[in-house]
Length: 149
Image (tube, rainbow, N blue to C red):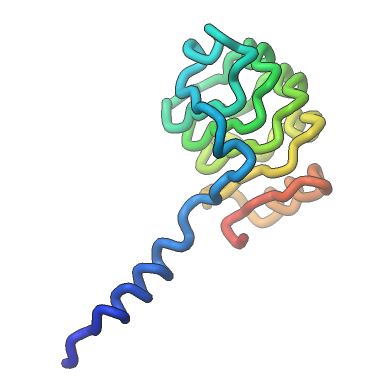
């Protein structure tokens, strides 16, 4: 067996790691808040909220107070629905629902978020293709990121 060259290892590494989560350019320059409590202390300043992997079973309706929120990461939590107040997030452009396995489908309130541009719904192996197609129909003007994207 021939040894693998360094260039081959580097090429394979590039291929393997190039499928990392989508980088959101919209909020790169914004400070990131990592808890609702922290965000609600200065709600007008919050542009990016990352409350992923906190085992949340619900999303606090007071999220509507984050009037300048543009990027929201709710991935890998345990909620089964989203509050109707999500529709009040008029500046929200990017929503990450990756791996939110307790959701049976994309909640209808997502379609009411007026300026949503991108929705990430990867890592839902329990969903059938119809759930992904329904999401795309629900959000015809939104970039819906699925496992196949």
